Length: 243
Image (cartoon, rainbow, N blue to C red):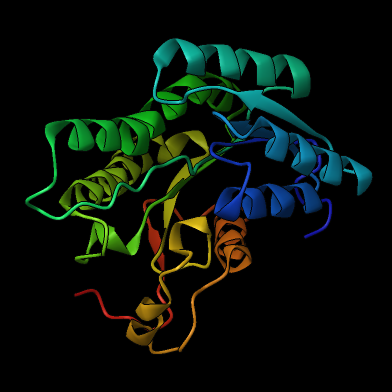
């Protein structure tokens, strides 16, 4: 897929590490100019942008809290000024606050919905004008197996990711005639910082190992490359049933 995305600009939220960083690398390898969004890990994001630059790609860092409307509007302006109109949006930013039902607070719930779900809505709304103007766009939302299964984080997290898949289908149906596809990727147990120290969970995976961030990135690239596929969720579960 080298140069398949030449001339395209991509924005990846939560792009400084883990799945986000793997997606940034894959998009850059395919020729896209990449805006790496992060909220706090500026150094990691700048390191990644430098790495992409050394390999002949183009990348910039845009620090912003994507759960805030003004910050999102400013971020999209900066990306457009620095790299050009956004063609590809990957909504990857998210938090995972592990809570039992008895420990779950209203604040935990509100914060999770704000960061995991509202951010995807705000970023999508902000990039739509440029995608519509060019009648081409790819939006990929990073969901989770927890959207349909119990998961290990808590009901607040389930709700945020199920909402993200509802958002995916709702936008897909309304944008399909404008050359814009909207899909989701739902990884279950992936080897990232979020899963460090959770080796006991490997026993639940029929394949016998965690998935990798690169494997998630490959699923994202499949969706970016496919103009006919929209409103879908690709599950990456290593054979785990949703239960």
